[in-house]
Length: 570
Figure 1 (cartoon, rainbow, N blue to C red):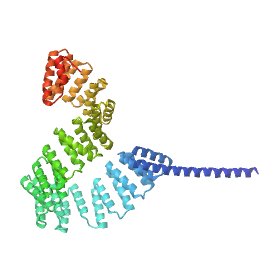
Figure 2: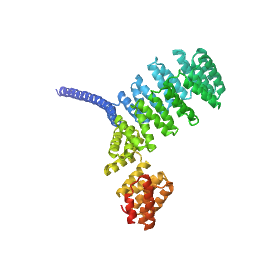
Figure 3: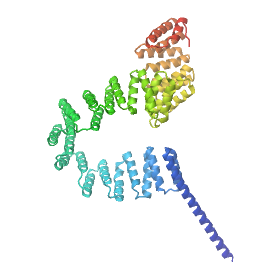
Figure 4: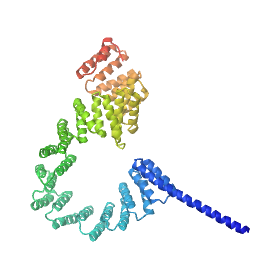
């Protein structure tokens, strides 16, 4: 009887514990699912760090969840945390080796890491999973090439040819392998086979000519291109390649002739001509070719008088060549045709500000800021146009709009926006907001000399936190020595601290480095001299500052009072 009772209770305990295990498993499974979808939602909202934390929580509950490892690896890749991304992607492939996309992700991570040695086995797996996908065979062959396993790469391309048939891409790839193996004859034979197969196609002639140019044989390249021209007369891309070959031979006259022929051809469409001009702009030899590129761009505007892109590109070329006034005219023409392209407005505003055309920039800022309320760079340049004309409330609106829409990863622009807000808030007597904006800018880039200087100067004007102002101003001068503006700021901070002898040294440095008479520098010079007791010289410098200010449109009212009273007045 006692034994029967023991067995009964033992069975009861087993049943109860089993129910608890089942209940716990169900709870865990539900929690895992909830955490997974929570992480996906956090990712969708852009909360990358939070999504990673959630996935780590999930994996503590279920360390065999392949989907969680996959998502975690994707997030880490986005976060440029490549080492952890590789570990977690590999774990996903181990847990579910037949999932194609897990292997694709792992391959992408190794590519970013430039770990080419690890790539071929991954593509072996992808070929196993998807033997009909040609691109995985190509990826494997190219990975072997990158890993300098050249014979294996050749064999891999041979296998592609056997499985999928002949392809020009295989020929081009083999040519690269032969070049790396220092077998130029075999490379030439490979590319020549394209011409033999398709003698009336431009492709083979261009590839062979390009190969000869790589081998430093421009005369052979021209010979091949002449053969191509005989078969396909008037082809613009043959002319372009000949222009390159003649340039290699230092025959600039023939090179220019071929370039103009290509550009004049009706077989090259508008987009092709745009691409050509852009490539010429980015060419290291662009300075030598500046007049030709400029002329071709002008020709494009004549041929396409209703396409804003032609005028915008001409403007870009002129701007690159430092012909800013002429560039401005082209941007204005582009805007007349199509006013809905924000980048053209940005270029226009930037040029007008750099040329000191503040009234014109102001007029365009009103239009641009209204047209593109969500474009941070447009708002940024518009803000500067308003600021320069003392339209501080409008400037504030633009800079705040820029801040709202700027990509946080664009740290250079974000720094400049915060710094500009610091200047604007100060002008509006919003001193707490100004300090906060400068602090935000320096938190992103602690070596931003403009921010360091302006923050220090405005603190000195307010006689606030002068020790911090001195530190920032000193740093800006260390980062950019011999800048008269920065030296003047440091002199003024020292002045406000009562260190007049040291202030004198720095204002004299600023005046020496300025190279021209400056209203602000001369006034500060007089102020410092007065505090040092040299009243006669101080008044002389104030008079000099007044004369300078009157020619540049400065407000000299306070300065006149100093001169009349022969004393420093704040």
